[in-house]
Amino acid sequence: MNLKEWKSKPTAVQHAKRIQSTETYKEMVGVLREEAPLNRTGLPFGAMPTDYAYALGMQKGYDHAMKVLAAMGESSPAMPEEIEATFSKDNYNA
Image: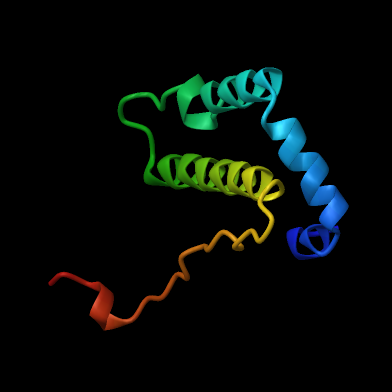
């Protein structure tokens, strides 16, 4: 099931909203935020660029999952947008 299918079920959204309003849920989300990939372990000095790219990808995926989790309790959740990677000359500062 994806977010679009989830939001098509009003009862599911209502239940999620009720759960998200509890203090326990809020504390759990706080723990999840503290356990984000970039908060757990830093990259060592001199790490390869690919290591940084991998870590950034992990963090972006984690952030997206957190946005989807939050959107599940919104009555009309907007799909979290991911920036499209383009490699046109307009993107270079030079």
